[in-house]
Image (cartoon, rainbow, N blue to C red):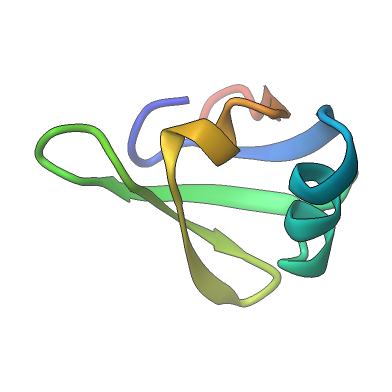
Length: 72
């Protein structure tokens, strides 16, 4: 995804603590997500998810598969 794109979370990969932490933050399949901004060096990123802003490190975000909405 690039800044300004929206999508839907298709799948959350990973196991154990990482997966549980993402789920606890609301990162679950079928949730809509909007890519708000990226830090100057690319880490962390900020997304809007379930009505709140969430910052994720690249290490956490790599486990999340998103289907980008076309035309947005």
